[in-house]
Image (cartoon, rainbow, N blue to C red; front, top):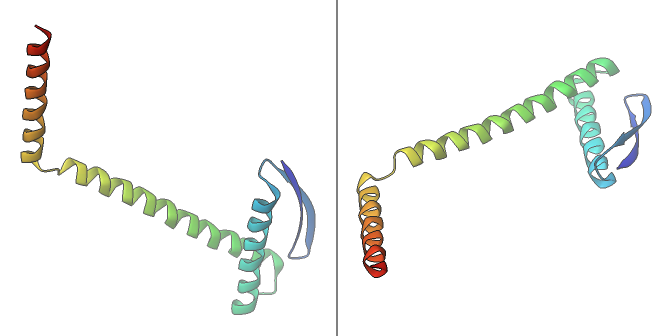
Length: 107
């Protein structure tokens, strides 16, 4: 658990969280960098607009990363479902052969 001081867009407060301080500092610094880019590139000086736009941009990044993860998982499931039927038959044949040998050895 750590406490970090946040000074962003004219607002200052302390944040207490379960995460470690280095992690919280990275999150704070990333948010600040997004806000700075918005103000620099979009010439937005209203702090509320900057804060809202930064939140939307970060949410967009998060959503895209989650979607990539879902797409990758779905592709793996599809590939597994389309596995080679001959390989499955061979695996089944080998498993039955091993079972038969084990049963014979146990007799």
